[in-house]
Length: 427
Ligand code: IMP
Image (spheres, helix red, strand yellow):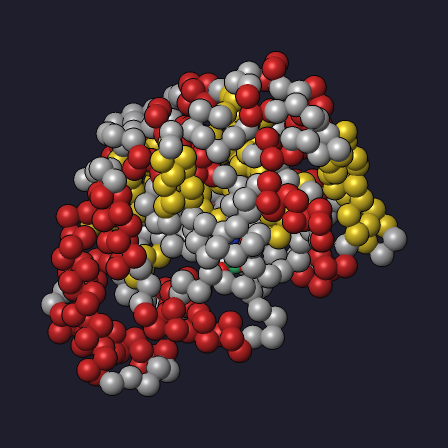
């Protein structure tokens, strides 16, 4: 058996869905451990494109259990709609399991999310899906968990009213009752999927199954390790796997860190290697860098080694997957930030204060681009020499093996040794 974790090492949108899709055929179970429908994974299978927000991309394969762990926050109506969209396209969701400990996103969370964004001067640029307030209520011990909805509608209404009271929300009991009725209806539809997922995952581990943990978002927007306060409200880092799925750290075998061949960020916050003007527009258009969830244009820039070293450390990355290499095809030159200049000094430390991150000046190394089409090859040896040099440089500087390279949106556009990752880690 092996357990493999896939996490993002940038600001999210690294192409984790494609890497999970690549590793999934060797897995018996795919588990999401954090975030909610703020995430968006796009997987292209033949002519079909699937956009998933909550359900792990493993659902596209038959015979793989897909689990939403306790660390995920769930908008139940969105969940039902996502299940229905998959069913309409002939994808079975019978093997989907939802933790009874996962917290529920309520309409009030969405209102609070948007109201707080509206009020803040230093906007976060949230996805507006109610993610922050749901985690706030979870930590504040006034949240509603999926399993709580097994109670009667009357008890659920009382619980919502009591929690709203504690949160300082002025409510009418009729509103709490109406919401309770909706939640109960959603619960009844989803009931067959709801279980104690920690027990289920640990049983699978004891039964020597292969488990793939699918990260959402990225390390640089982790609430503890990212560019706080311009972060999401969960731990997309590898550490989040344990708390977000109820699996002990001794059970994790391998961590794959996913990086895009350049950098993107959606929402506000510091981004030292950000490009502006025509250069940014060019990369955005080539890479179709528009958010899967909100459709917002993504900010684009060069790779940042300072940020990546930080992400690799915190995640304990064992191997890297680089995605969207083909998007760089045809650029005359490509830059990599090797260090920051801070107050006239060279630094390789990723600062914790956003004010400091806004001040750093990236120090770049420039690499020649390539004119060939890198997406037509299926072997490392056939990649353009300049592309190999670019990747080799990343590997050397970061001191982590690069085992997977994505060179196109389609499922088969990938160079690598996914099976090797499972085999090497097999206990
Ligand atoms: P929230 O997660 O909706 O609260 O948004 C907080 C920040 O995280 C915003 O800057 C979002 O744009 C960003 N964010 C949240 N989820 C994702 C994601 O899946 N990809 C990229 N950025 C994300």
